[in-house]
Image: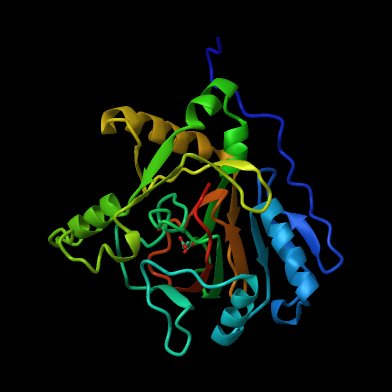
Length: 299
Ligand code: SIN
């Protein structure tokens, strides 16, 4: 029996995806890559297909110096697939699928949008597949985004633990998050408000181990913000499993971290990753915009 925690080894295969349309430079051993040599609006249809393959392989890809307008952001996103419903934010005027994520320099909040480890809107019956985020303005330091590779985390579980998880369903719900936000703002709980629970925010059971719709790769469907139970288990039974899987998945070896620059864009695969944007840049303005692309029912 192991007496100390051993570091994960093997199965790290973030070697660069090969494309005729761009070059790829991996970011960390676990995941993530920079796509170099292309401006997105000029990418051919074949190039977009190749970019999607690069995304499925690296799970997060980013490009510098894109400086997209809202219209370019929206048009390119539409080439990735139909837009998803955004459960939280309203689009900007004239571009309803381009959603602002802005923190002003004088805004101080204990709970930032996207500040905890999560996958996007897993409480929906059909959560978004891809999220596409761009920076217009950012702090001189801080305001990074980090990701964890949930497929790599699954690979590094023992076969016994994998087999235990495979038949289970995880309860993804925004309920605890909404309750915490209300508490921090000193507001009443909004659970009676039908608008707050529109779009299935109340919750959905999904497979704890999901199969990627494009690669067939198995991945943990785990989330520190929204995983709130396991089908057939009491909260007391489920919580230690969820907490341990979050801790396992977000260990340093399975993550990458992006230092943003204005004009940069990035895309991630919600079926195989968690992410967070640390709340660490008070005093500086951060202006981001995101679109989300529809995904099917996780299987
Ligand atoms: C998000 O969770 O979608 C936003 C992450 C970030 O702002 O870095």
